[in-house]
Image (cartoon, rainbow, N blue to C red):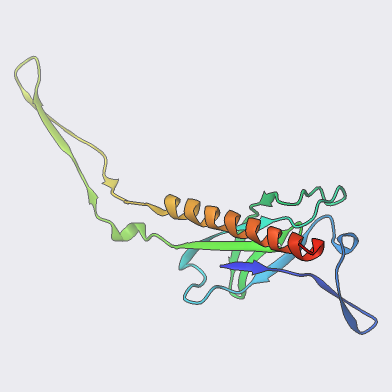
Length: 160
């Protein structure tokens, strides 16, 4: 899911768009509602944020990204952002390791003295985790979408 976040400030009873100077250098904690069909403890979430402005004060470069840590809470996904603009949230279902049966391997052999021995390996869970490829696909789609969005914004501002 992709969000385009704009910080607005209430000044003298009127809302206005925030500027770079309005943004605190320590960042802002944002609470993002869980996407439809997901929730706390049912999915693993990751977030990618793309900077829209270059700012020496905020130590940001337009087009660069950050991947801040996310915290799941009852009211949504909490994250501290050091800038605002395009945000991509991705998720995968939480893997329940208790649902996968473990297996035990036993190897039997004969020793030099002719006696039989058995060695039992530790139980190993077969996870079959393929989530990493989905994260790379989401990251690639986010990058393409953000690049297209920046191109559209540049065309609007230059009149071409």
